[in-house]
Amino acid sequence: MKYALVTGGSRGIGRAVCVELARKGFPVLINYASNEAAALETRRMVEEEGGQAELLPFNVAEVEAVDAALMEWSDRHPEDYIAVLVNNAGVRNDTMMMWMQNEQWHQVLDIHLNGFFYVTRRLLKDMLTQRYGRIVNVVSLSGIKGLPGQTNYSAAKAGIIGATKALAQEVGKRGVTVNAVAPGFIATDMTRDLDEKALKEMIPLNRFGKPEEVADLVAFLASDKAAYITGEVISINGGLYT
Ligand code: NAP
Image 1: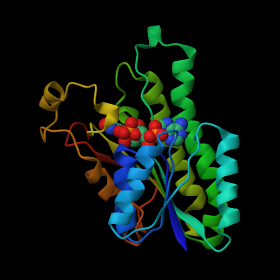
Image 2 (image 1 turned 60 degrees about the horizontal axis):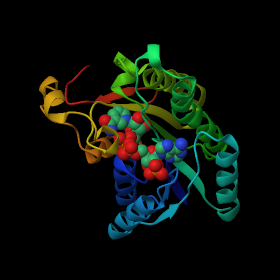
Image 3 (image 1 turned 180 degrees about the vertical axis):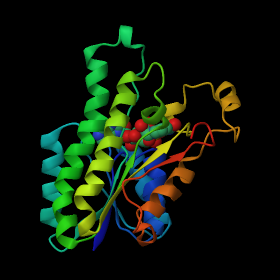
């Protein structure tokens, strides 16, 4: 069976992606860092749609934890493989660079950029052997345009964009596609502290996006219909920046 793994699947965009991929028929692995209650709620939502989901907690920034969890899963599923990987786990830790602490820089780089590397590297072999795979990286407008107060986050997301383009060229011949989606402002826990009323004035479509809208795009890129799209970064931002 072809499984889909969604990192950071317990909340926000990741949760919506889990539900949408389940609707498309994938058994879903819900990764998260610590919020088990939220991950269980995602599983309930997947099951409500008639889908199948398993929790797979690990910290994407800890290489040993990533390797152990994925190896243990493979041992339990000798007949299956993870054909769809959505690298979505993430945090913000914003401040002007002048005041940024080493920990703030490293935390964001570790979770986004190193996390992308640790998880993706482990799953590539099966995708290449099976000659089929879909990797979708959730990046950000911040990684394309840069946003003040987010040098750590912009650097991490821009790094993933570079890796997306390079990896797409490495694995294309084997039927594996690698793309990125770059959301603008999406209404989730991550943006709860922002002033939506003021910020939406800057957005041509005059609102924050919904996690489900990002999930539809991710699910399309994960589908057979997107077989000829690779190495792309697709913005979903209400026209904020293109
Ligand atoms: P969110 O609602 O805050 O959810 C974050 C998710 O990431 C949670 O499931 C969380 O797990 C998980 N996570 C955090 N650190 C992790 C780690 N070290 N290991 C494993 N999982 C971890 O965030 P969101 O808004 O949905 O964001 C999802 C992705 O979209 C992120 O990559 C973010 O940078 C990107 N993005 C978001 C926006 C936006 O406006 N919301 C815009 C552009 C890009 P727990 O529940 O266990 O904490």
